[in-house]
Length: 411
Length: 126
Image (tube, chains in turn purple, cyan):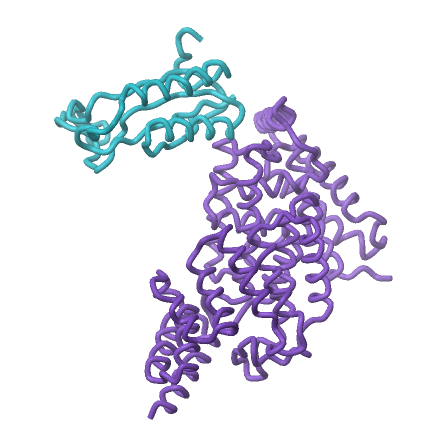
């Protein structure tokens, strides 16, 4: 079967992280590793269509990249060779030190922790993770986050330079640092996902590519950290959220609330996988914030219609989540479930004192509750406020329509 | 092996009245002892108040020096002390810096020196 450029592009995305992580370890330098892997793919583009795909594309890429890196070192001036050699020695020194701990099953694990090191800004962590682990190009990342390519390129260059200059290590953190560092990795991935799910700005509700990318990397993390239930929890949460995408907008691109969604449009495969992950987490009984949010999503996706939702179960899960993550956003979401269980008046009382007046969903919840209490004037104002706070065009349109409809009711 | 500067930033004005300086110094000494034990110690010290600073400028090196009574930057916080350490493990350095920040209650900055080897003059007693 002929190998097409689409096949090679797919291998590039799938294997970039693995190849770069091995080469960084060998060369001790991110840029050199990226160049070598890029060279190897250039050779692949030339040879694979002629000779067919090798049995292990990743292995082929890594071997070719290694050879290319050695060739490159030989070609370059002695001074640079000396520097490169010292970099390799330095890398060996850093990565094989006595404080290397924990089993490393995959070089990509080191890469993830380096990309998400807390000494890097959150934006840099996201960009590096997508670029090095995800194999996305700088223009792709720039496009996904709606920033100019030059800005994104500069962000990546700066981050790589900090890794080199400050000596951010290329390894899995020590046990005592691990929980905090895993949290940082998961947060980066969730950030990529939420941006893909509901873009903070722009004309599209979300960017499906980015959400799909986050799910793909979520699978990688679960594979790399099989003993980390929160990684499985995050993957489940992303799957159960993404499964509902086809029903989230109607044919004209307008937002459809959860209660009104056509559940037959949900992706049954993703829901099944998400539910299986949640069950596995429950058996492990080490709940964390992502697992609990996934469990809540599992309850929501467990019934054929919204009316069948087990709201007491949802409230109980939010109570648990609130103990682990006592934030106003969790309190807000819990209030939504309380409204279904104890009525809108009880829920409205729970919104008092929440410091979320700049958060569009807070006003959406208030608008819904006030509407159900027949206070349509206040409800319309809350819809309007929510619309003002949303920079996402389809979302804002939906909110304005609700505002207008509620105001008309009031007259 | 890399060398890092750990800077401590102090707010202007006299130290708060409830500050237990003896306690802070004792806590710092525990961290410093660990840095020494790990072979990372180069130098550490606290600076006198910034009213004692003198700034010297030469307009790009061309004019004669002009001396100004006072610090280079007038700000609410200034460099109050510094620690220079060496390590081949950035996470270990960040760990020391975190402990210094906890002991002093002050914000702390970690910054690498240029190059891999000993910057400038080799520290004495090394």
